[in-house]
Length: 243
Image 1 (cartoon, rainbow, N blue to C red):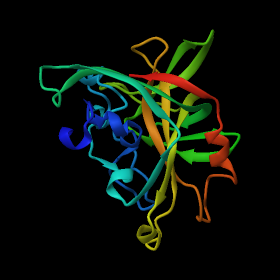
Image 2: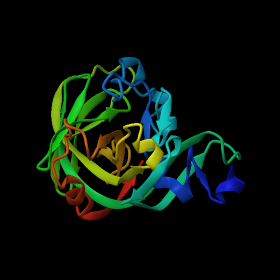
Image 3: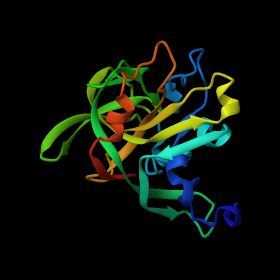
Image 4: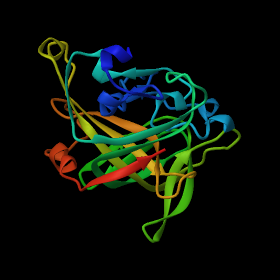
């Protein structure tokens, strides 16, 4: 694989297509095509707390890669700036202990509402969209840019998720356009967003708590208002450290 990519490998993601690889989704689809909510058994084990949240190795269920598994074209609006992982041994493709990825892209705040099982977020341009969660959530309050902010973090083993509302950050990864053959099968264009909470481990950093994989056109029940993708794409570009 490395001879094919001619790139470095970081905790399951290839550097030369890092943004595309960030578009992994937890498997286990519901009838509506979205991801089934994580069960309490999928809370983060204590020994896995330091695993990079941006990697699929940090969750306890299968994942899928839509921009790999389906024919089409991915247009990234974010880019990888740097990545660093601490390997557990000398195997570059083996287990890692921790990692940090610096991503630059359109970033905006959103309000999250969590009922102990499912989560949605809202912005002035998105009335309500479901978040595909990596694990059950807990609330946490942290200092951010000189103010105290209530945000979301992944629950750890032994914690009981409860309902809360708070602030999360959305990183707009890009847009996926299906190929002509796929379009005939009623597979639609999609936008990919990472949903981030403030890190409990590294000051000033973020942790991935979920993602949004939303159809941007054609659907009658489209959650995205007209022009939303353009608004998101033109959000202030910032560099974020995700651990």
